[in-house]
Length: 250
Image (cartoon, one colour):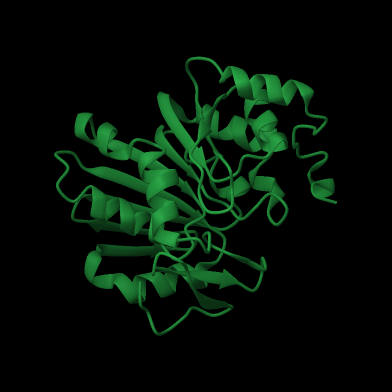
């Protein structure tokens, strides 16, 4: 990623693996770990959701929570360029300007570009891309006919964007997920894991990346890892809900 132009209200940040990410002036947070934007994407989302394995078996629908600079989509497209099946990539993004910037920077990758008031729709060589623009809690429910095979839970941190980490949010994701869905995120917060469990997800330990000692993987089948269950039982941290989210991190 070596774009010279940055979108409005963002600036480029170099990361330790040589890739770049964007820093959001609105959220006062980078879109990826400064330990490595591309490496983090590969570890947490591509491998965390077992994208190559799933794609080899069937046509997939992927939901990404937080489009950002489009690195999740671009990395998925790169990894699945020789896949026998197409994939459908749906992403959520509150900043329309950021999505328009992405299209301008990467328009050679996209065909049949269509804009509506609330979305971008386009085709790519391996399937389709759709970015839903606006408040994720409002724009996602109408897409009830879709079933997610994989979820990249890559929103800004719970302290910066708590509404995308509550029990109610994870219930919404579960409602529209395939039974064999895999959800992956960089967060290993006890409150976030409790939120997922309260919404019906089973929690598994994810890999370490950068300064974080672990991360989180979630499924709708099996059981929560025993050591995680034991730790959460001892933790005083409450599950994050729509009712208490404004107090998170204070």
